[in-house]
Picture 1 (cartoon, rainbow, N blue to C red):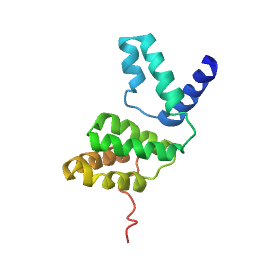
Picture 2 (picture 1 turned 120 degrees about the vertical axis):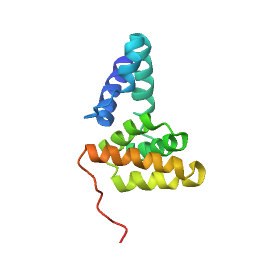
Picture 3 (picture 1 turned 30 degrees about the vertical axis):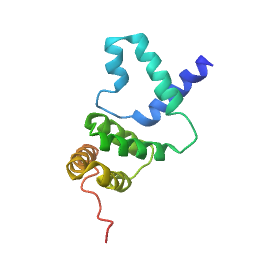
Length: 133
């Protein structure tokens, strides 16, 4: 079973974080404690993110909403990139952020949208096409 979890961890990490240039949490954890980093990665990426109860797109949009409400912008940046990697569109990510307004407030939404814009600029995906008209 350990081999199966390790394979799921690698597969899911590649799906979510391929091409991410920012420091990944695993790299940060590993710089302090290699064994704990491995255990955390196997659980978070190999068990939680690899679950097939909901699609990866849905999982990432939930993550974007949660990180927006909590104002965890560094982690939000990482998961915006993961969202794009699993097939979420910039419009879906922006709408997810907008939907948190009622609970998070405008300053929190604005900060999250700035983070989204920054990621999209880096990926050459900004400006977004206007799809509202």
